[in-house]
Image (cartoon, rainbow, N blue to C red; front, side, top):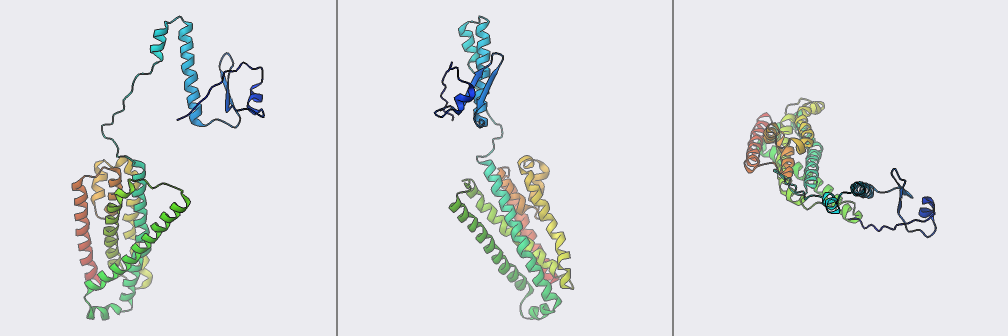
Length: 301
């Protein structure tokens, strides 16, 4: 991608004056010092320019040595002609892999953001109803299943709205400031990320609701929340291993399990390493886990 114009010179001017003269048009000067070459620039050469210069000088040196050794010109030309090289990958990575991985990790952070910001509200609300004995009054009028489901759905929609506002603000800021380009592969992950965001938020929300039902005092809410956050943090940390461990057996197994699937499945989708049956199995297990957690939360409530 470089356009280079060379100008031979036998001028008696010094290299410094050739570069720093009032009307100079040179970016750099290559000086033959007999035993080697000196490349001089005004403020420094870019890395890609240095690479071109290094390769050119080395090739020219080899060609000069061969000619000096009276090697026939046809042999020199054949030796200096690089052979064709074809790169073939047995397991090629999907296009835009870096952008896809970044989008998946961003989705994982959004889930963490939604869970950390809102499921604690669910646990606190349930705990407040338990500690004030309001739950006894409510259950006498409305089934516990409807109470907890309504609470999770209402707060969940607030959390989802906050995430949408956050992502929308970031997208608007990007369009205004032109700070980054969104890779086209990002939009291929939106459906999977949204699906797992909903499933993950629902599963953790009902789990936190069950935890909030266990406390006798409002001050104990934080204590019962901690064990439920640990799997989410572990999954987030494991998401960084997706580029090297996504195809290993242990990573595939753990990504299907409900506590970790909402984080790791979008990451594996981005890596292109998840098969259809694994994705379906993870969804089925997650839905079954949500149903079990709902029954447990209602029973405890």
